Image 1 (cartoon, one colour):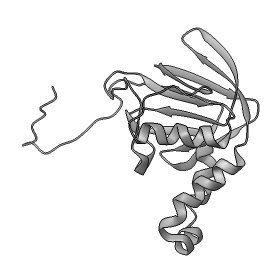
Image 2 (cartoon, rainbow, N blue to C red):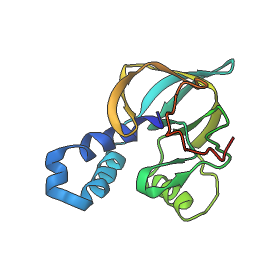
Image 3 (cartoon, rainbow, N blue to C red):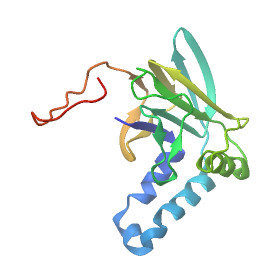
Image 4 (cartoon, rainbow, N blue to C red):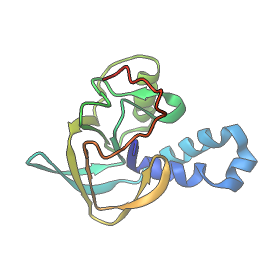
Length: 171
């Protein structure tokens, strides 16, 4: 899995993946879905546990990412992330004013590397998430799971089959 997310991404996915909306709005579907998700911004409380730490948080978005790039066409990047580092990148977003949320998405897209108060990142090998109520979670952009749950790196869990003449230059 590339990314799992709770909060803003679930609201976005519910709207953006509807066939009737896509047929009606076409290329504007994603922009409309972003606007709706940002307008709603429901706050959820959860307990997170990683590497002998426990934390209670109030968030509007939580993402667990297994790659340095996320956000589809926005091509957002997590500094220091490496697909081979055997860690998951976690992004936690607290309830922020709309202008700060928009700025947080635009800054990385245009190359600005500046921290924004209310947005935190972690690198962990295992993360346990327990919301106060069961919540939908998107898996690679589709609403396809529920929290509470545990996210963890499973080394060598994916077997890749290639043609015999394939040459791996990254070994």
